[in-house]
Length: 298
Image (cartoon, rainbow, N blue to C red; front, top):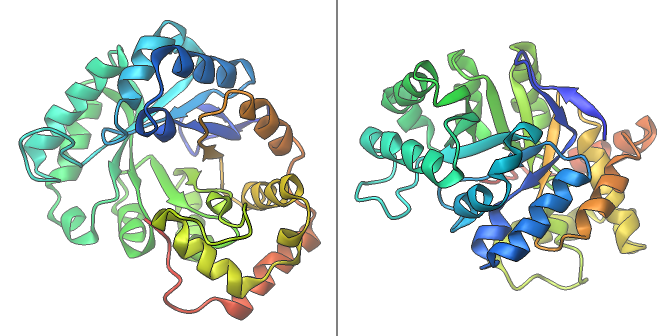
């Protein structure tokens, strides 16, 4: 699988990464998680993205693929208490959360720790940023980043302290293309995209049961992209390749609990960027329809 430079870091990441939320939030057993993660690595993915609040995700990664640590870059996040006896974003929480993540992941360090979608107000106080800077100085993480969207992400970029940005971008969520990505790329910040296929909210043709997908479903009803009316795999391929076509994007993370899906996803991503005219058509439709309140989704 194609590898891309990750900003000014020394990492060369696969353009498709593994989002590990599902393995922790869907109650996968150890054997199933081992098969899922191993299949992804064998398919050429070299980035695993997880978080402190993804249920048992960190523990399962540690149990099943820590012996292959040299085969992948490891990203995690901090900020939510997730069982620790502090308020979210308390600096003491972040310190304990980072140490807990390392223990769960069976590793001495991660490649990136992202602040997990905290507000601009919290960022401006500075304490949470200082915790991450100390973690980097102590060798607990090689790089530090911010995971989030909209104005908070722009502020994080402009602090000049972050090496990485994880943000939402897809056919139903394009604010970042103009608001944050150009400046992040200019500053040499590595860019990871979450939700690159808009959670495939159109998959069944009916509004998804999960409220998590409702915003994208509602937007897509107004955007009315023609390609969403055809074959499902073709529409997912076009959505994924659109996101991979955006300048500055290094990698996109997709989650699944089905091991066979990684080979399919790798094949779709391997088709490369969309032709320029198709990208421009999707962008033109967004600019025509999108309302001011269609901001990046947390």
